[in-house]
Image (cartoon, rainbow, N blue to C red):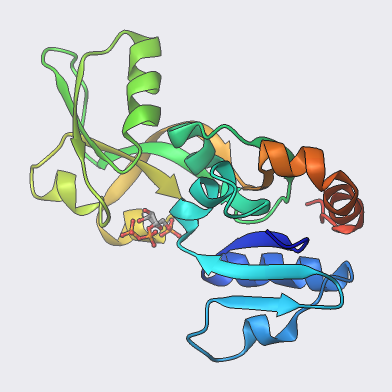
Length: 209
Ligand code: PRP
């Protein structure tokens, strides 16, 4: 291992925002935003290396130490409970984990509730706290389609603008928890690269609402 700090960025718009926060804090690597299929970028002088990963995988890279730090949504952290340190709420990528259903849906609690979701553990915890029996149908995307096709009664999913629900005639039944992007660190890296990680935490400018 070299003495670079390895940073897992979630691919996409959120990751670009995160990179710009790093850039503003003095940890720049402009090639990161270039129109290229490359996934790994480094600034040799600042000893920092960024790589793009699928957003839901960022926590795995950090937990396993392939990345020293990274950015993951609170939704992913609550779903997979990776063994990492959560250092900072970046106050971006904000949305809510919600239960949603067709507009005319009413839960009479007569039968097991069928829940379609990418977030099976979050859904199980939510309904177990309410003492409600559920069957989970684990899907990998386009969750909103499930109640429309009669595959499930409700969905548990993140809602950002609400557009996807609206355009599919669904509505929020209840909010479960708020979500935002978090800076996370590998536990061993935090011990051995403390100065550099703390320097980043100190310089990242988190905007308040
Ligand atoms: C997410 C989420 C919702 C949508 C919510 O989907 O699963 O479908 O965004 O955003 P909105 O409230 O602004 O409409 P994503 O784009 O990750 O696609 P996928 O779930 O189909 O993978």
